Length: 278
Image (cartoon, rainbow, N blue to C red; front, side, top):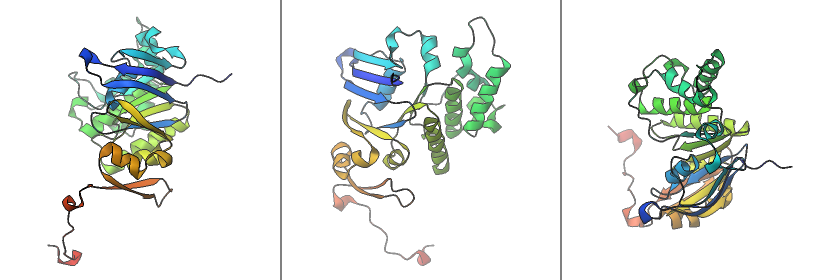
């Protein structure tokens, strides 16, 4: 018998105070896959992730985790199944990096118990996975935005989730760290975790994801493999820009270059040879 997918939403809508933000969304994320959630600012990507993580409650529809209605799960059980890496990396707590990562073990520790040496090993392993072991004893508040982002990913990995939700995981990261983070995310998916990540960079989404779900104004307007979905026509309709899509020289995935629809407003390249630049 086929196991149910780690995530399945059916006709999920969210309309706080009558303002429709998420409109009748269906999506499925299979085990061992990386799904990129893409769309312009305000499309509803973060809101959908928060609904799946139960930080907000849908106005209508259902969200199933591993075939079980999420609304019927206790918070502790839900936290053992899924983890959310949020876009904002702020906290008022004055904790060390290791303490922050150990918070990810909370769902696995008995209510009256204390973390064990095994919990500490899991936390240390998570720090090593994200390349942040050197931060272990530092204060979380002293870290840069990019460093905090890696620590919060380690905290999520310490939960040992079957479903990993990521809201702009490359936010605040330089190019090298972006590639490292998405390579790790790809490795986690290949290892069996279901990953749903909101991404802004369409080329990175195309290169690392198995499928993309395109949101616009709270609705799914397209879904499928990156090569089939991220067409110039779709990008123009959703983002309002021209897109030239060519094969990536490394792996053939879609490589996307953007320009304004109004060519008159396109940036001009200075007519100066590199040798004359001072």
